[in-house]
Length: 272
Image (cartoon, rainbow, N blue to C red; front, top):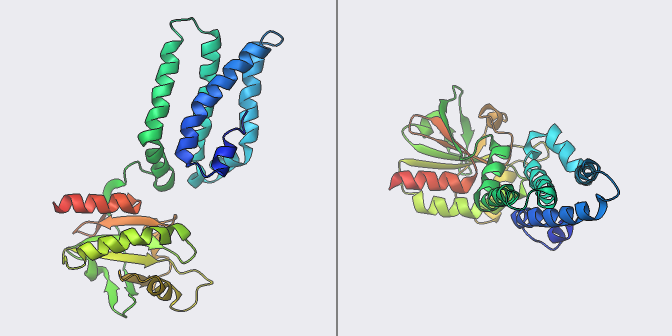
């Protein structure tokens, strides 16, 4: 039973649809399991077996979730499946009228997770916040680097501007998937002197000289690429996940940390 959602993922079904389907699936199958086996073993034994089986089937992702905070997103899926098992127990054993209340509440929670909660949890698991907006903080270190045209970029470049910094590296496939969004934003705002836009490259040991610039040019992107002289610049900004987007206000304080689309939406909404 624990592996039933796997064929859905193999068929290319999006993760959040798998999450939505998992709750009623685990609810129905656990209900049928309780009806079938509780006549020969205790209820607690069946419940223990179902949850243990789920944990064993998800053993590797759970271990990763514990060891690496970036994988904590998967724990939400485990929770929804356990919730389905518990609701199956409630349907089987609960009183006829009362049992509908917790099952209905759990169903509403699953629907919320499907429409909104999944994205909020994913954002928190990745960036340690739910919406991207953070308490304004100014970092006191020198920014120094060159763009693809050889222009020097420093802290003074950011002064009195709202600045979007999109951190990426040459091995980050998802970074490149997001670049069309960044390019479109750049096209809309490139003539706005109050906004600065930079794709900040994190140099990797295996990168060739100018490889980052060449890859951007090969894809036809024209947004500014900042190649920092300090290779630890992303870490100084607290960036450990790629891509990560930061927004600096006109006082060079970080006011946003998260994914690109929401950062763009925040900037453009404040321009209206």
